Image (tube, rainbow, N blue to C red; front, top):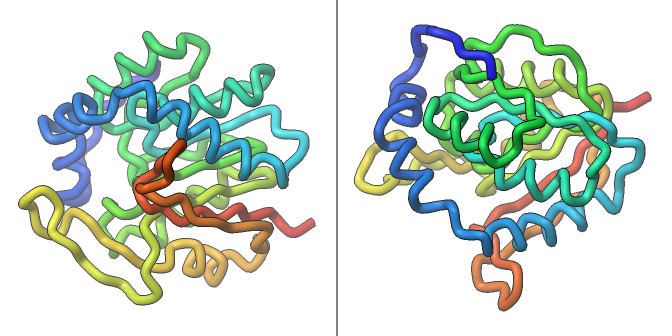
Length: 212
């Protein structure tokens, strides 16, 4: 695990790096989340091929990566995570994953991977910083990008567990495609929180592919 000592650029980063981020871990460790993620990613990966390397932006304790590595056991996996406690638990859960304990906004170039994933993270990024995150996602992807977030056709801000300016909905994938025309839409779908077998938190996912 690579640790860095960086100065955060936004209040949202400080929010997730500290005690609130630890509380989030405690709320999201149930193994049923793993089953739901395996179901979700099996749908997404059915439209892909040749994925041998993965990087996740904002991996938390690694439930998404655990699901992906269940489906792609021969792939290498890399994680970027701002919260040090989450990094420690991720390392215990998935020892083979290469982890960078860093804010996405302070992330140096990390090379290219077959799949770059961000799930439930863009909704917590300061809107002024989204363009920079889109750029980092694009630069990290050799072929595929998966964006799985709350969707809204126009930007809105929602109070999050009593805190203002900590949750945002918008068309993240559309903005990514507008900024990076070298990618195109390959597939998309919705995962409902009331699914009787494999619920997700009402996220809309988008599978994007680099145009050859």
